[in-house]
Amino acid sequence: MSQTAQHSELLSVVKVAEILGCSKSHVYRLIADRQLPSLNIGLGTRAKTRIPRVNVEKYIDERLTTPTKK
Image: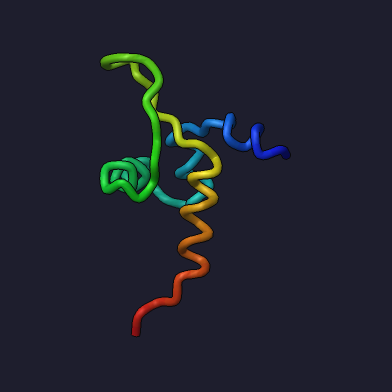
């Protein structure tokens, strides 16, 4: 997949939760804590939250390469 195609793929909160193996509320918490950049498409109560796939991949990569504290 080209870099342009990766940037254009937007994932729903449900899909991101499936990828990360967590709940939708956890994904919303990551977004609120600015750990997972997202965007809203639309206005008001009908707005849809979408997360670029590259942001999800970056989030995963950062957790895989960061050593844990002992």
